[in-house]
Image (cartoon, rainbow, N blue to C red):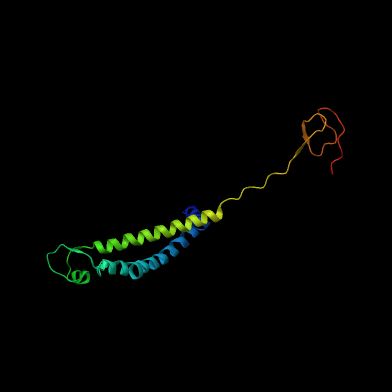
Amino acid sequence: MKQFFEEFKQFAMRGNVIDLAIGIIIGVAFNSIVTSLVNDIIMPPIGYILNDIDFSNLFINLSGGDYSSLAAAKDAGAATINYGLFINAVLNFIIVALAVFVLVKQMNRLLKEKPAPPAAPTTKECPFCHTQIPIPAVRCPNCTSHLEESA
């Protein structure tokens, strides 16, 4: 049992798990911002353009009664299909997906590997027989010519 807890401790303390936990916390906070953006900024103008429709108040009453709003239907315990809330949830998802896409695209652009500089040459050409030889060589191993001293 002690080994199990040691393995769990090692797993929980890995950087990836902690990064994931931080990401979830930030995601939850980001969700409230997106929900506010959809409900308070995006949906009112769309509702205004569509003759003052409040999407969060769109529902189908399955109970047979007549209710002026979704809140009134819920207070009465009526069974409803809340398609307006579903539209808001879809818009929330689209905005979050778009934000994540833009974030990942920018991170990939920033993290893109730069090409490695070309490696320094390790050989030179013998001026007499034109074969490749190590740069520090002072005599060609192929034609045995004396080469200029390397610096």
